[in-house]
Length: 402
Image (tube, rainbow, N blue to C red; front, side, top):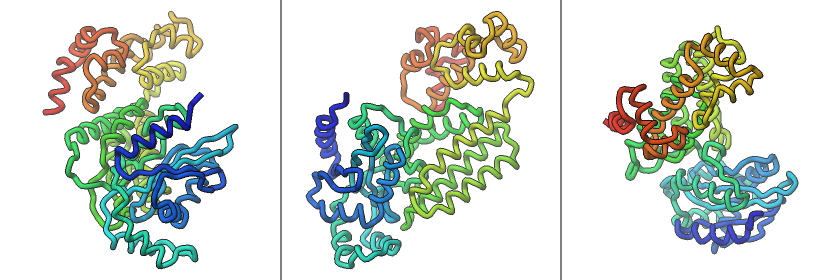
């Protein structure tokens, strides 16, 4: 049983270490129950008047996961929910924060998108004058805060790719200062490598990238325009990787164009935030389908997919036989006939492929990668990797850095 009150008390202390980031609690009807914000009336009204509370409650009532809601000028709140018997009971909010540097002029321009009797000129001036008190939090860090909040509320550990927390690759990028460009490049190469291979087990690599990448460093006065540009750029490079992986150019460009148009048609962050993740998943599956051997029977294709999706498991021929209802002897004979490899060799190749991605895109040690992929020992992993690639895992990682 999760002790929410105790967890939230600790969470609030941790948030204070990151600046003036406040925690708000609302009931299922949107009534404010508590807040530690000294400017409660101002920022609470902003959350409501700018339409963010209405969108947040809509997500909560539909059973959505934690996510960020925000404005056209980059003011963001993070939201998560507590439910009882499937019904929304509480909504928790952190913020507000800015996702990037803004000026008073940016905010004034952004207010042109909002209208209503509740938004008076005096209130707008109060919010504009208070903008310097709102912290700037990079989307990577804001994502981690929301993952922490979700864990405090539910005890459930989520990955960034499980949620709609991020604006994904569509987020307005902060200054290039402090960006680890080499890690970002490695992460990008790993993602594109998985597209080329049609690797269905992309979730971990995508999650790592979401927690490393700052997105495309495009600067401008319109955050939504920046978001669209970032999604379009990411879609373009994924499209080309898919063609390199064997997807016919006509199919790849048609698919890419549809996602670019979806990004271009978006009117809010809410509409655009899921586009890059859906696009990436779609291209992965299309390349995977294009690579499928038409001669494979359905049971053997299912076994192959299971191996490729679960390289972190210790997979035996016996397990695959049970999966498709064959005897172990019949499965091993059919698998070798149709794929040209034994089950053990196919499993080993899948694990080596995953190891290469981890060596390129993460800072995991050789021992940690060995354990994650169930090789048994570091020495055995290094020997098998060397036989397959002609170099040790350490040498491979250094070559990629070079």
